[in-house]
Amino acid sequence: MSVTLGHGASVRIEACGKTFADGTRALEPATLDIARGETLVLLGPSGCGKTTMLRIIAGLELPDAGGRVLFDGNDMTSVPIEQRNVGMVFQSYALFPNMTVADNIGYGLKIRGMARQARAARIAELVVLTNITGLENRRVDQLSGGQRQRVALARAVAIRPGILLLDEPLTALDAALRDRLRGELNRLLRALGITTIYVTHDQSEAMELGDRIVVMQKGAIAQIGTPREIYFTPKNRFVAEFIGAANIIESPLENGHLVLPGGRQPIGGDMNLPAAVAMIRPETIRVVEADGAPLCGIIDSVSFIGDRQRMIVSGASGKFLTVDAPNTIKAQAGERIGLLIAPDAVRLLPPEH
Image 1 (cartoon, rainbow, N blue to C red):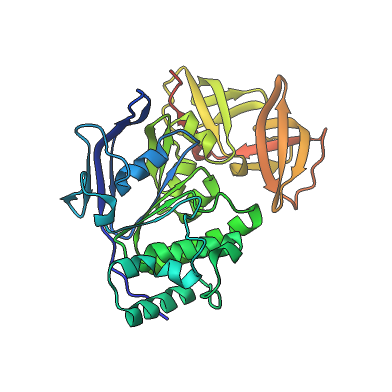
Image 2: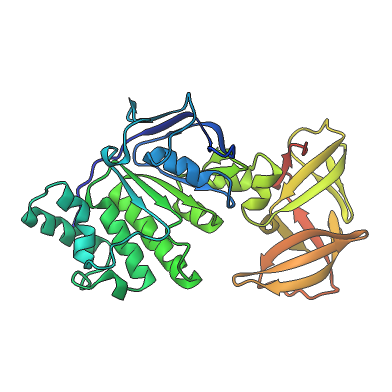
């Protein structure tokens, strides 16, 4: 059963900052464009400003003077939330416990005056789409966490919003259910085609769901890019370490090589610097025979992490690299191994100030 929705609205936040009445600076002035139908993820640790930005887009907070929020080029800064045509899903889901599933889904349609028959048809479409068939007459306080999440999402999209706002919708679920629903949510968002802004602190959610990711740090945008760009070409140390495992190496440079405890590593990029802060992802490092290898070290420990094994490898002066290798490689603590790293796998980062 298909659900016909618009292509979503474009969103622009322009010089939007937020200082609360007590003087707390929650969000530095930020400008951001979100394309129609795009899923944009706001990612960062607690207190970084991502939820404040979402609330400004929703109309739940006003930006500081000079900030503007535009939908399809129309200034919505002072327009109340009920007139913005946005759907929202909160971490708590905010469902009505005394209502049935069907009544929760249809609530927004009812207050907009949709006729009973049309409302019932719309609810039926969404029940199928969100995989909750058979639960229509059940009260939401009788549902599991995953079922409540699906009901909340169905209610949010029932009104055919131009923009869907999701604030940590999977956080309250256990890990296994969260992983499964993340896949379902990804499928659903692609099928709906609504412009979606998704807040999370979970890097895996961001990588799987986002067309682009906005990494936030201390109330400011640290980097905007596709999941691949954010992962492989982080702009600074914070982004590199927040998005997945990373080897961060501070090293002098000699003739375009990092000087490491286990040898010298050629790099790409600016070779005229006297020293560098470099990032190397653990899975980009190949394990080879020690004899003749450009880098060598001793395995301190080996941990099984599912589809691969993680090795901590030490050089002459102590630990220097974390390596993720296939489980087909037989490795044990105390073994001397060689390491091979392609020059373009080394990402130079700006020095910390």
